[in-house]
Image 1 (cartoon, one colour):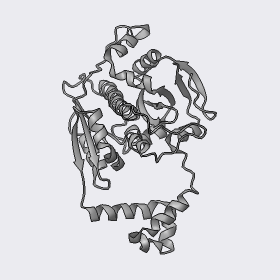
Image 2 (tube, rainbow, N blue to C red; image 1 turned 135 degrees about the vertical axis):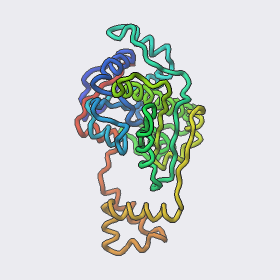
Image 3 (cartoon, rainbow, N blue to C red; image 1 turned 60 degrees about the vertical axis):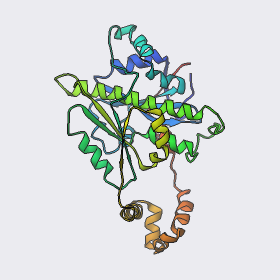
Image 4 (spheres, rainbow, N blue to C red; image 1 turned 60 degrees about the horizontal axis):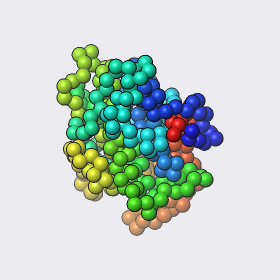
Length: 308
Protein backbone atom coordinates (compact mmCIF):
# COMPACT_ATOMS: atom_id res chain seq x y z
CA UNK A 1 0.00 0.00 0.00
CA UNK A 2 1.34 3.43 -0.89
CA UNK A 3 1.52 5.87 2.01
CA UNK A 4 -0.38 9.05 1.20
CA UNK A 5 1.10 11.04 4.04
CA UNK A 6 0.14 11.82 7.61
CA UNK A 7 -2.45 14.43 6.64
CA UNK A 8 -4.56 12.04 4.54
CA UNK A 9 -6.90 9.38 5.85
CA UNK A 10 -6.55 6.20 3.79
CA UNK A 11 -9.95 4.54 3.71
CA UNK A 12 -8.83 1.41 1.90
CA UNK A 13 -6.26 -0.14 -0.39
CA UNK A 14 -7.41 -1.77 -3.60
CA UNK A 15 -6.13 -3.33 -6.77
CA UNK A 16 -6.28 -1.68 -10.18
CA UNK A 17 -9.12 -4.03 -11.18
CA UNK A 18 -11.14 -3.02 -8.14
CA UNK A 19 -10.51 0.65 -8.87
CA UNK A 20 -11.67 0.35 -12.49
CA UNK A 21 -14.79 -1.50 -11.37
CA UNK A 22 -15.51 1.27 -8.87
CA UNK A 23 -14.97 3.99 -11.49
CA UNK A 24 -17.33 2.35 -13.98
CA UNK A 25 -20.03 1.19 -11.56
CA UNK A 26 -20.21 4.55 -9.81
CA UNK A 27 -20.51 6.67 -12.95
CA UNK A 28 -24.22 7.28 -12.34
CA UNK A 29 -23.41 9.18 -9.16
CA UNK A 30 -19.82 10.40 -9.54
CA UNK A 31 -16.87 10.64 -11.89
CA UNK A 32 -13.17 9.93 -11.39
CA UNK A 33 -10.70 12.11 -13.30
CA UNK A 34 -6.91 12.71 -13.18
CA UNK A 35 -5.99 15.61 -10.91
CA UNK A 36 -2.21 15.98 -10.63
CA UNK A 37 1.15 14.21 -10.79
CA UNK A 38 3.43 13.68 -7.81
CA UNK A 39 6.74 12.90 -9.46
CA UNK A 40 8.66 12.37 -6.23
CA UNK A 41 6.29 9.64 -5.11
CA UNK A 42 5.84 8.40 -8.71
CA UNK A 43 2.06 8.38 -8.60
CA UNK A 44 -0.86 10.22 -10.17
CA UNK A 45 -3.71 11.54 -8.02
CA UNK A 46 -7.24 11.01 -9.28
CA UNK A 47 -10.25 12.63 -7.65
CA UNK A 48 -13.92 11.74 -7.42
CA UNK A 49 -16.45 14.50 -8.05
CA UNK A 50 -20.26 14.29 -7.86
CA UNK A 51 -22.02 13.63 -11.15
CA UNK A 52 -23.87 16.94 -10.91
CA UNK A 53 -20.54 18.80 -11.09
CA UNK A 54 -20.09 19.39 -14.82
CA UNK A 55 -16.38 19.64 -15.60
CA UNK A 56 -17.14 20.54 -19.22
CA UNK A 57 -18.64 23.87 -18.16
CA UNK A 58 -16.06 24.62 -15.47
CA UNK A 59 -13.87 27.60 -16.22
CA UNK A 60 -10.91 25.54 -15.02
CA UNK A 61 -11.14 21.79 -14.44
CA UNK A 62 -8.54 21.73 -11.67
CA UNK A 63 -10.44 24.37 -9.68
CA UNK A 64 -13.73 22.46 -9.94
CA UNK A 65 -11.97 19.25 -8.93
CA UNK A 66 -10.40 20.91 -5.92
CA UNK A 67 -13.64 22.54 -4.80
CA UNK A 68 -15.90 19.51 -5.22
CA UNK A 69 -13.66 16.49 -4.61
CA UNK A 70 -15.22 13.73 -2.49
CA UNK A 71 -12.33 11.27 -2.44
CA UNK A 72 -8.97 10.89 -4.06
CA UNK A 73 -6.87 7.91 -5.09
CA UNK A 74 -3.16 7.57 -5.72
CA UNK A 75 -2.31 5.41 -8.72
CA UNK A 76 1.33 4.38 -9.15
CA UNK A 77 2.59 5.16 -12.63
CA UNK A 78 2.47 1.51 -13.71
CA UNK A 79 -1.22 1.29 -12.76
CA UNK A 80 -2.23 4.67 -14.18
CA UNK A 81 -0.99 3.74 -17.68
CA UNK A 82 -2.89 0.42 -17.76
CA UNK A 83 -5.86 2.39 -19.07
CA UNK A 84 -4.06 2.30 -22.44
CA UNK A 85 -4.46 -1.48 -22.72
CA UNK A 86 -8.09 -2.31 -23.63
CA UNK A 87 -7.60 -6.00 -22.86
CA UNK A 88 -6.46 -5.22 -19.31
CA UNK A 89 -9.40 -2.89 -18.69
CA UNK A 90 -11.95 -5.32 -20.11
CA UNK A 91 -10.40 -8.04 -17.99
CA UNK A 92 -10.98 -5.86 -14.94
CA UNK A 93 -14.63 -5.43 -15.91
CA UNK A 94 -15.17 -9.13 -16.62
CA UNK A 95 -15.40 -9.93 -12.93
CA UNK A 96 -17.57 -8.79 -10.06
CA UNK A 97 -20.69 -6.70 -10.45
CA UNK A 98 -19.48 -5.27 -13.78
CA UNK A 99 -19.37 -8.63 -15.58
CA UNK A 100 -20.50 -8.13 -19.16
CA UNK A 101 -20.16 -4.34 -18.99
CA UNK A 102 -18.31 -2.98 -22.01
CA UNK A 103 -16.59 0.37 -22.25
CA UNK A 104 -15.03 1.82 -25.36
CA UNK A 105 -11.29 1.98 -24.67
CA UNK A 106 -9.67 2.64 -28.06
CA UNK A 107 -5.99 1.82 -28.42
CA UNK A 108 -5.78 4.82 -30.75
CA UNK A 109 -6.92 8.28 -29.66
CA UNK A 110 -7.75 10.09 -32.90
CA UNK A 111 -10.70 12.11 -31.62
CA UNK A 112 -8.64 14.39 -29.41
CA UNK A 113 -7.92 18.05 -30.12
CA UNK A 114 -5.16 19.81 -28.20
CA UNK A 115 -5.74 23.52 -27.68
CA UNK A 116 -2.43 25.32 -27.08
CA UNK A 117 -2.32 29.02 -26.26
CA UNK A 118 -0.06 31.86 -25.20
CA UNK A 119 -2.36 32.88 -22.36
CA UNK A 120 -4.58 35.98 -22.14
CA UNK A 121 -5.82 35.29 -25.67
CA UNK A 122 -9.42 34.19 -25.15
CA UNK A 123 -8.63 30.47 -24.96
CA UNK A 124 -10.89 29.85 -21.95
CA UNK A 125 -13.80 31.55 -23.71
CA UNK A 126 -13.09 29.56 -26.89
CA UNK A 127 -13.03 26.33 -24.87
CA UNK A 128 -16.48 27.11 -23.47
CA UNK A 129 -17.83 27.82 -26.95
CA UNK A 130 -16.60 24.46 -28.22
CA UNK A 131 -18.61 22.63 -25.56
CA UNK A 132 -21.83 24.21 -26.84
CA UNK A 133 -21.62 23.69 -30.61
CA UNK A 134 -22.38 19.97 -30.80
CA UNK A 135 -23.52 17.06 -28.66
CA UNK A 136 -20.42 15.03 -29.47
CA UNK A 137 -17.91 17.76 -28.59
CA UNK A 138 -16.63 17.97 -25.04
CA UNK A 139 -14.07 20.58 -24.00
CA UNK A 140 -12.10 20.42 -20.76
CA UNK A 141 -10.21 23.52 -19.67
CA UNK A 142 -6.82 23.05 -18.00
CA UNK A 143 -6.69 19.55 -16.52
CA UNK A 144 -3.69 19.97 -14.27
CA UNK A 145 -1.87 16.71 -14.99
CA UNK A 146 -0.92 18.07 -18.39
CA UNK A 147 0.30 21.27 -16.74
CA UNK A 148 2.29 19.37 -14.12
CA UNK A 149 4.39 17.37 -16.57
CA UNK A 150 6.24 20.23 -18.31
CA UNK A 151 6.78 21.94 -14.97
CA UNK A 152 8.21 18.80 -13.44
CA UNK A 153 10.36 18.43 -16.52
CA UNK A 154 11.76 21.88 -15.74
CA UNK A 155 11.99 20.99 -12.03
CA UNK A 156 10.11 24.06 -10.86
CA UNK A 157 7.54 22.20 -8.75
CA UNK A 158 8.76 21.36 -5.23
CA UNK A 159 8.59 17.74 -4.16
CA UNK A 160 6.92 16.41 -1.03
CA UNK A 161 9.32 16.98 1.90
CA UNK A 162 11.28 13.87 2.75
CA UNK A 163 10.97 12.27 -0.68
CA UNK A 164 13.78 12.37 -3.25
CA UNK A 165 13.42 14.73 -6.22
CA UNK A 166 12.70 13.33 -9.69
CA UNK A 167 15.74 11.79 -11.36
CA UNK A 168 16.50 13.97 -14.36
CA UNK A 169 19.22 11.57 -15.49
CA UNK A 170 16.84 8.64 -15.88
CA UNK A 171 16.96 7.67 -19.55
CA UNK A 172 13.34 6.53 -19.58
CA UNK A 173 11.93 9.67 -17.92
CA UNK A 174 10.65 11.21 -21.15
CA UNK A 175 8.95 7.95 -22.11
CA UNK A 176 7.31 7.90 -18.69
CA UNK A 177 6.00 11.45 -19.14
CA UNK A 178 4.66 10.58 -22.59
CA UNK A 179 2.87 7.52 -21.20
CA UNK A 180 1.33 9.63 -18.43
CA UNK A 181 0.16 12.27 -20.90
CA UNK A 182 -1.37 9.67 -23.20
CA UNK A 183 -2.98 7.88 -20.27
CA UNK A 184 -4.43 11.18 -19.03
CA UNK A 185 -6.14 11.64 -22.40
CA UNK A 186 -7.51 8.08 -22.16
CA UNK A 187 -8.92 8.67 -18.66
CA UNK A 188 -10.49 11.93 -19.85
CA UNK A 189 -12.02 10.10 -22.83
CA UNK A 190 -13.57 7.68 -20.35
CA UNK A 191 -14.98 10.65 -18.43
CA UNK A 192 -16.37 12.06 -21.69
CA UNK A 193 -18.08 8.76 -22.47
CA UNK A 194 -19.60 8.50 -19.00
CA UNK A 195 -20.66 12.17 -19.07
CA UNK A 196 -22.36 11.88 -22.47
CA UNK A 197 -24.08 8.61 -21.53
CA UNK A 198 -25.54 10.31 -18.48
CA UNK A 199 -26.46 13.65 -20.06
CA UNK A 200 -27.80 12.57 -23.48
CA UNK A 201 -31.05 10.63 -23.62
CA UNK A 202 -30.49 9.48 -27.19
CA UNK A 203 -27.33 7.53 -26.46
CA UNK A 204 -23.74 8.25 -27.40
CA UNK A 205 -23.18 10.30 -30.58
CA UNK A 206 -21.55 8.30 -33.35
CA UNK A 207 -18.86 10.96 -33.67
CA UNK A 208 -17.16 12.35 -30.57
CA UNK A 209 -14.35 14.85 -30.09
CA UNK A 210 -12.56 15.64 -26.84
CA UNK A 211 -10.92 19.07 -26.69
CA UNK A 212 -8.23 19.56 -24.05
CA UNK A 213 -7.39 23.21 -23.46
CA UNK A 214 -4.04 23.78 -21.74
CA UNK A 215 -2.47 26.46 -19.63
CA UNK A 216 0.04 28.54 -21.54
CA UNK A 217 2.96 26.81 -19.79
CA UNK A 218 2.05 23.58 -21.57
CA UNK A 219 3.53 25.10 -24.72
CA UNK A 220 6.84 24.03 -23.16
CA UNK A 221 5.77 20.45 -23.78
CA UNK A 222 4.47 20.70 -27.36
CA UNK A 223 7.02 18.19 -28.64
CA UNK A 224 6.30 15.78 -25.78
CA UNK A 225 2.53 16.07 -26.25
CA UNK A 226 2.92 15.43 -29.98
CA UNK A 227 5.06 12.39 -29.19
CA UNK A 228 2.48 11.14 -26.68
CA UNK A 229 -0.56 11.85 -28.87
CA UNK A 230 0.56 11.77 -32.52
CA UNK A 231 -3.04 11.19 -33.71
CA UNK A 232 -4.39 14.32 -32.00
CA UNK A 233 -5.06 17.53 -33.86
CA UNK A 234 -3.38 20.64 -32.53
CA UNK A 235 -4.66 24.22 -32.53
CA UNK A 236 -2.57 27.18 -31.36
CA UNK A 237 -4.23 30.37 -30.12
CA UNK A 238 -2.11 33.48 -29.75
CA UNK A 239 -2.42 37.22 -29.41
CA UNK A 240 -0.43 40.32 -30.25
CA UNK A 241 2.62 40.22 -27.96
CA UNK A 242 2.18 43.74 -26.57
CA UNK A 243 -1.50 43.16 -25.76
CA UNK A 244 -0.63 39.84 -24.15
CA UNK A 245 1.99 41.43 -21.89
CA UNK A 246 -0.37 44.26 -20.98
CA UNK A 247 -3.07 41.74 -20.05
CA UNK A 248 -0.69 39.62 -17.95
CA UNK A 249 0.58 42.73 -16.18
CA UNK A 250 -2.92 43.98 -15.42
CA UNK A 251 -3.92 40.56 -14.09
CA UNK A 252 -0.87 40.27 -11.83
CA UNK A 253 -1.14 43.80 -10.49
CA UNK A 254 -4.85 43.34 -9.82
CA UNK A 255 -4.89 39.95 -8.10
CA UNK A 256 -1.43 39.03 -6.78
CA UNK A 257 -1.03 40.43 -3.21
CA UNK A 258 2.70 41.29 -3.47
CA UNK A 259 2.01 42.99 -6.80
CA UNK A 260 -0.77 45.09 -5.27
CA UNK A 261 1.72 46.26 -2.68
CA UNK A 262 4.25 46.98 -5.41
CA UNK A 263 1.68 49.10 -7.20
CA UNK A 264 0.82 51.02 -4.04
CA UNK A 265 4.52 51.75 -3.54
CA UNK A 266 4.82 52.75 -7.22
CA UNK A 267 7.36 50.00 -7.79
CA UNK A 268 5.41 48.70 -10.76
CA UNK A 269 7.10 51.36 -12.89
CA UNK A 270 10.20 49.16 -12.73
CA UNK A 271 8.35 46.32 -14.45
CA UNK A 272 10.16 46.85 -17.73
CA UNK A 273 13.60 46.48 -16.16
CA UNK A 274 12.67 43.30 -14.33
CA UNK A 275 13.14 44.77 -10.85
CA UNK A 276 9.49 44.15 -9.95
CA UNK A 277 9.84 40.45 -10.61
CA UNK A 278 12.85 40.17 -8.29
CA UNK A 279 10.94 41.75 -5.43
CA UNK A 280 7.82 39.71 -6.15
CA UNK A 281 9.79 36.46 -6.13
CA UNK A 282 11.36 37.34 -2.81
CA UNK A 283 8.01 38.24 -1.25
CA UNK A 284 6.24 35.25 -2.75
CA UNK A 285 8.34 32.91 -0.65
CA UNK A 286 6.54 34.26 2.39
CA UNK A 287 3.20 33.10 0.99
CA UNK A 288 2.22 29.54 1.73
CA UNK A 289 1.39 27.62 -1.43
CA UNK A 290 1.14 23.92 -0.55
CA UNK A 291 0.51 22.90 -4.14
CA UNK A 292 -2.28 20.83 -5.63
CA UNK A 293 -1.73 17.52 -3.87
CA UNK A 294 -1.03 19.06 -0.47
CA UNK A 295 -4.09 21.30 -0.83
CA UNK A 296 -6.36 18.28 -1.07
CA UNK A 297 -4.55 16.70 1.86
CA UNK A 298 -5.04 19.80 3.99
CA UNK A 299 -8.75 19.78 3.11
CA UNK A 300 -9.00 16.30 4.63
CA UNK A 301 -10.12 14.62 1.40
CA UNK A 302 -10.45 10.87 2.04
CA UNK A 303 -7.82 8.89 0.18
CA UNK A 304 -7.63 5.53 -1.56
CA UNK A 305 -4.41 3.74 -2.37
CA UNK A 306 -3.82 1.12 -5.04
CA UNK A 307 -1.89 -1.86 -3.77
CA UNK A 308 1.08 -3.18 -5.71
